[in-house]
Image (cartoon, rainbow, N blue to C red):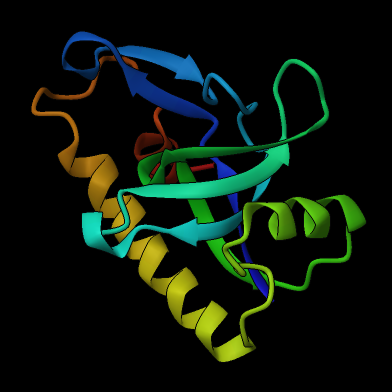
Length: 139
């Protein structure tokens, strides 16, 4: 089992987080990525991910900030390309057990929400479309 997540549709950017950008530089907003490694020594602020790149559409392996992901979950990996890239990375993130994957996915979900709220000291821009504001708005 591996952990999967989605890239936030909009993220805060720039001086005080007053600018909004869609997705990340490498992934489109809403893209599914596989989380194959975390860095516990840095409180899981960075993750190694595999997903389809924004510009090429081919699978890429990059490190990215946890705060730019949401909806962490444990999923089986069926894609031969993802399995190959996971083996090439040499971290073993695609081969963990279901219980371990569920536990880490829950932890990463809590940490990602915490990092999104504490990353910026300034208030949200108006109108704001960041992940927190979009999930709190009705309908």
